[in-house]
Image (cartoon, rainbow, N blue to C red; front, side):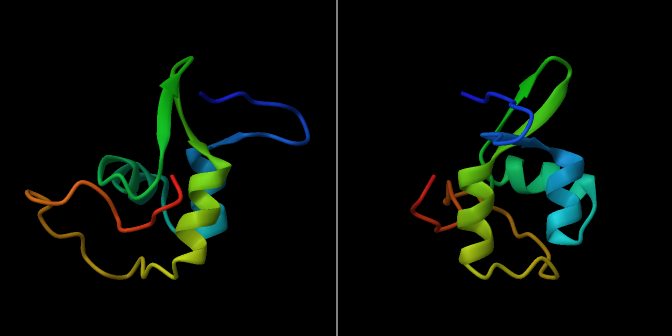
Length: 81
């Protein structure tokens, strides 16, 4: 799924996502768990697809909101995963 390239990367690290979203790497991992971001664990680190990050940012999601229990929901509502 993820291929890291030096300039035009399909996937970026959790730390890079956190910097772009002005949040913490832990919050990014929670967003992956909530399926708000699409990511995979490879070579000992989590990577997030650029496409899912762009979609998440375009959706205007509010990172200040506390995540709720997702017992009956499987995604963030963003249709471009």
